Amino acid sequence: MIDPVALAQALIRCPSVTPKDAGALGVLAEALTPLGFACTPLPFTGDGGPATENLYATVGSGGKVFCFAGHTDVVPPGDSGLWKHDPFGGVIANGLLYGRGAVDMKSAVACFAAAAGRHLAKGPFKGTIALLITGDEEGDAINGTPKLLRWLQEKTITLDHCLIGEPSSTVTIGDGIKVGRRGSLNTRVVVEGIQGHAAYPAKALNPIHALAEFICRLTKTPLDAGTAAFEPSTLVFSSVDVGNPATNVIPAKATGNFNIRFNDAHSFDTLKDHLTAVAEAVEIETGATVTLHFNLSGVSFVTKPGPFTDVLDNAVAAVTGAKPEHSTTGGTSDGRFIKELCPVVELGLMNATMHQANECVPVADIEKLTDIYTAILGAYFAE
Ligand SMILES: [Zn+2]
Image 1 (cartoon, rainbow, N blue to C red):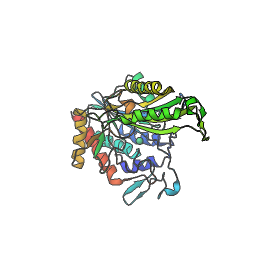
Image 2: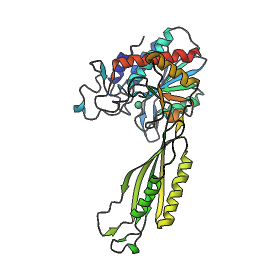
Image 3: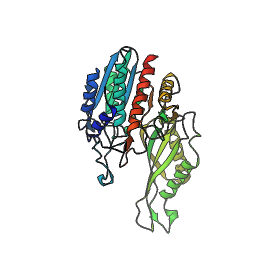
Image 4: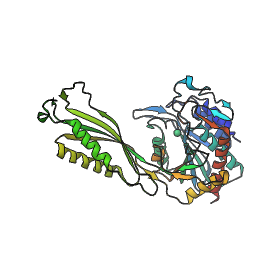
């Protein structure tokens, strides 16, 4: 049997700041192997990304494949003076396990490994339990999940459902699952006019005024009113840059950056069309040249309510007494890649201290999440 708390401590003691593995995946494989898991280390390199360790582990055969996806890399601890305990010490104090990755998400990886052990101890079952663990989730993921998924496809390994152990709970463990994520599109706008003297604006073409018009047009009309599964999409300018130190000069160029978090009412193409139309309208009105540079981080996805989400809802309710809320808030996750292969949801610990100094999780929550994951496996393979 795996003790999830001890395994979480052992994982935290590996200082696996992205893209370093620092032995973390070896610790996990060492825990899984005695349970009967076949562990395949999958190091990937190249494509401009850092060398990354990854792991695919499976046990069982036939039937449906239930995949747990997660990561053992962590964000840097930041100023170590702000920590009450060594961020890589795995210290337990006053019922809390401290350390970088305690919440995001080494403990959830440990919970799932322990839950798999408990499920296997119940006797033979028809189906396959898989773990898909990457060492580059907190970075650009170039040699992480996308290449893991490509490897699965090359081996013609299919997944039926996937649960990502990202922190999804807010006030109490199991109070929320993420059934989807918004898409994210970053765009840089470059507006070019004609440089001139501030006293003779008629002889110049002010790109700042044209950029202001572009910003107003984009921000005064909402992108949508929300959909069944999503809040309204948002558009946020993060920067406007001119770099002009002179007070008597109209500059030649003004630039800006904005981010759109979009729901399932939009695709990359529909957003591109919308933004291009606004840019063209501003060009016609102002005479300036407006150029857009798009950088898509991920499109939106949602796993619709059905038998799979019912299994999760009921398993959570069996342990905590209440069904979880379904939400689609937050940033992007590796779900944006996995959704191409199978339905995916996220269910994990409370997210309050993730990425903070003194990241910590109640030890009792580690036990509870293990119970939840065990209940999920039981219900999933009983179907
Ligand atoms: Zn994470």
